[in-house]
Length: 299
Image (cartoon, rainbow, N blue to C red; front, top):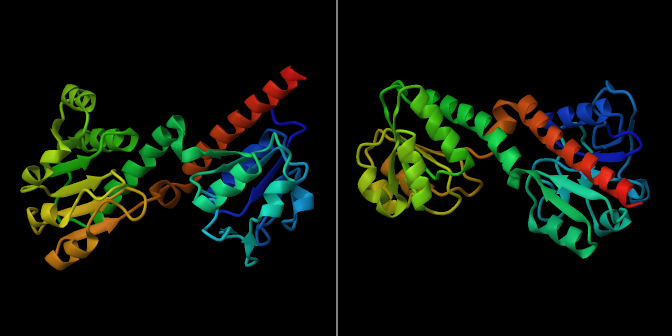
């Protein structure tokens, strides 16, 4: 339980509603900032204006999936008021407080480092990333079906990267009958893909493996699908880039060559915001409870 703990939830989208619900369910005292247009459907919740004074007693601050922009602005779907996180806000937090976000930009990292406040980027945690790989794979399949005139079953698919998202993507495609190649860069990934009955190859040889591909799913967040690679792909191919912006594809050359290339980061929050919110809420509440327990034991 989060009884006696104060949590600030600042801005966000539909995912944050699950976070609000979870915190309320666990008996935290919750303050909402940037939720002016949301009807108060939870108990034990206070809507407030963002100020250093209100943040002084917080045990946790929960920001949206992308915490702030490069100037500190926090996006919210539930208010027309512009929210901005400043030095004064972070400086007002107790030293034991934690700031949660999905992934942080340099602005937020610098603020938290400056005032020695622990910043937790949920999307970098193994459990969150693994759970999120499920709606990511489902969303990628949806995009593939919408942008092809063939069935996924029997098609020639390629997944680049065999990390948490790549593995789930490859297994999902395999499960519906696709012929799946997997581009890897480490021997242990090659061995695992082989053990799963996939067709692994090293990404250094990518150019020679794309000649007959129908669907290419990229999870590698660096330029890997270059103009040279695209030049060897058939015109019917569709590239679905799941890596964070700007992706790992030369989109300009793909368009020039007439190959459809789609950048699709952040699919969990788009195709399954309720599930994505629950994943974030469960992880955050566990961390907050463990931290509170540790501090009580140390007292």
